[in-house]
Length: 389
Image 1: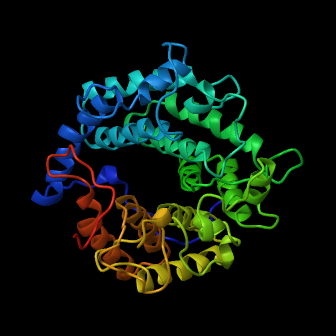
Image 2: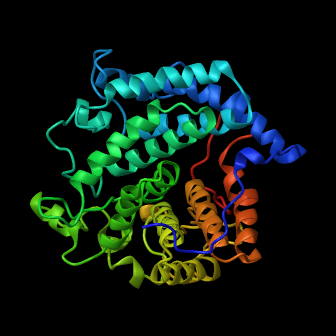
């Protein structure tokens, strides 16, 4: 499944030096404040905040500590995103202390990995007999995707393979669980993320099975019989139990992705999915996916995006609603959604070198991404209202 395209390849961020006073200030803030502060948060060392327990969860799963799982079912992803950020910083700044902390947690993660390659502290500690029984809601594949991205980032920065080898074993295990072959699950993630992560893993390892797995998750989504319906029925519930009339649209699983022409459902999930679709399209030259990405892009930026680059206009399901429904007083505009929009725009720019995409990147970065972090680097904003009573 070698790449069959003529799309542009981005310049490696390691070859880019940012020295201007505006963005340089933010890079310094991330390096000097945010990453150390988040390390303390992950280790429950910040007073007057809810404990994270995220690293403690890995220690328990690794048999290095005693206790119960604490936090959300997706708590592992916080550790993964810290490692990914550390990798980005280490790629442009040598920092032995930061690298030592990263190696410390990577050692623990490796010990927490199960013999078959599985890696998820919630299910390892709390519900070991329920792996893959609720992939619609329980974020197993989502957490796996973030850990894969962390491993790629850290390997690119340091050349160290330990975490990369861990996620390759995990991806191999996932590939053995999911697929169209007899005995495999015909499922896909409730929260898209692993698709774009698998493409990153393919590009750094040159193992085509990872690209094929990403393509499988894209191709299978929304097909009949719908997997989420089958999964819900097995538990005696309906697929739309949580999000009511949004139903399968909430998960972008209402119809196959190539038939989707409007941005629907949870806005972060949507733009992660579209980014994964674009990645697979770029690597395989799939013209049907390219066409779908362009239709979804046009719908977002011309009918479902605020002037600030914010997307997701309602708190109900953190979702898109309908064309031109962009109220200022009930706007949700989750910061993560605008970050995902930047991901999607960057991939569309590779498909078609056009300033339409780079303009949206700039719009979202300046208005809806950096608004998600305070100037002191220790407060974070989930939503971005435009009008407040």
